[in-house]
Length: 288
Ligand SMILES: C[C@@](CO)(OP(=O)(O)O)[C@H](O)COP(=O)(O)OP(=O)(O)OC[C@H]1O[C@@H](n2ccc(N)nc2=O)[C@H](O)[C@@H]1O
Ligand SMILES: Nc1ncnc2c1ncn2[C@@H]1O[C@H](COP(=O)(O)OP(=O)(O)O)[C@@H](O)[C@H]1O
Image (cartoon, rainbow, N blue to C red; front, side, top):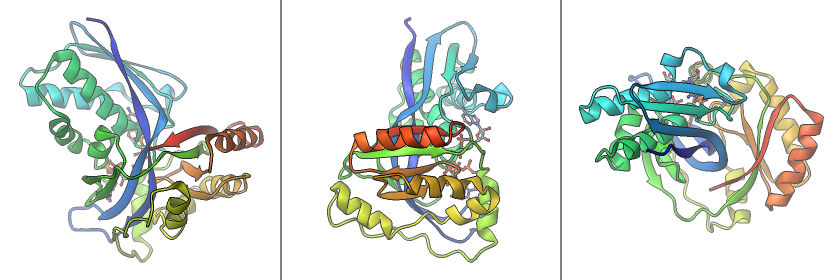
């Protein structure tokens, strides 16, 4: 069998409204999630045993191989299919920063579940794979589907959104990891509001979406920035870029994004920011 490959795209929360901690240890949330055209790259081919090789600029940021969500996902698929540990040689080209609010680990898991299904010829549709992904992380199902969606519940109750048009954007990570658990605990120390899904924008053209997003928020932005001041620096530097129409943190950080009117404006701004902050991860992209 030939090796097969997939992009594991970065996830961005255009807004993130978080409610108070519930008895199950999770927070209810309301979010509109979209996906970038940048991400990790997963490659899979049939082999005698199961193996994972990690390459790329952020390979060193990942700890023990056995903790990798890629292996956890493939083992869970093998168990669900009743075939034991699948024989697959997997390569993860880690292009996304780790613990960055981009859902990288869950997106890797989603991509490898689809690749392993196809390589092994297993009769699982995406909904069945999403159930496996849900057991790995709250954002597992959204990253498995990797399509624009309203997310509610713990982030696992999805309503796909077909109206959204492509949004030119810049992704900026200031090089500090942000622990999701620690950010939610810092959020708990404040006074939580409500995780309410807002009425959608009057129109899905970029200008209406940006105006509507300006009155939404990411409730994890302040607690995350209190833990990692570099997030505030990234927000300020990105908001200062010519053409940046809206700047916000994604997920539990530390990555922030800015929306632009055109892909060209995002690219020009990205070059300017990379020159000012050569140690930051800066990527122009299109969110959809
Ligand atoms: C903040 C978000 C927004 O999309 O994205 P990321 O920053 O991770 O990309 C998600 O809620 C992150 O979900 P995910 O990263 O899957 O979380 P998990 O691994 O399942 O949980 C890590 C920890 O985060 C907390 N957690 C997670 C989800 C949620 N709705 N409420 C929570 O309180 C719990 O303390 C949990 O133990
Ligand atoms: N393939 C993977 N890619 C990224 N992180 C992974 C992976 N496997 C396990 N992890 C662990 O998952 C945690 C969350 O990482 P990540 O998914 O990048 O961030 P976030 O949840 O902020 O979007 C990290 O602590 C990391 O060690």
